[in-house]
Length: 162
Image 1: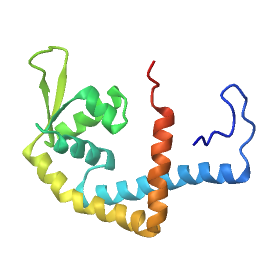
Image 2 (image 1 turned 135 degrees about the vertical axis):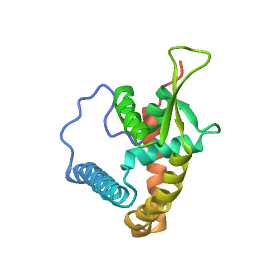
Image 3 (image 1 turned 90 degrees about the vertical axis):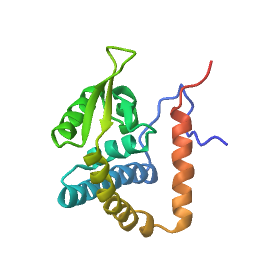
Image 4 (image 1 turned 135 degrees about the horizontal axis):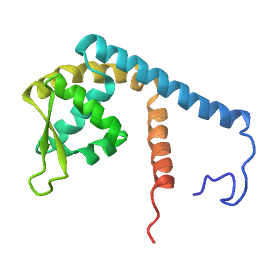
């Protein structure tokens, strides 16, 4: 089922009122939720939401370590942005950098015991905030519709196999 409103070669015109409301609503809601969740994380645990996300990705890794490029991809950050963020986490004692034993150019970020503890303490705050500000506000069918919508959008952006 295609949801495309314009053909690939057609120049799209202005968004209609509903389309603009959907797009602007996504942008406003995302910014508002991220700001509120970040404020809670900073106030209660002294880390940013993005730092929490990096700790989450590392804690979900089998070894507690990820290559910097994998971590950047997972956190949706540039490599330089991730590097600065990891520097701050290193300064907090939550992450360490490690060289790859098989590739001298490769570097890993490794979660420390203090990082595991900070993540474990922050996790309930994050989950509660996501539930209060997002999940519990929407009816269950709206959550299911959002999941289906995100899947459609991700599939449309996925590289096509030759």
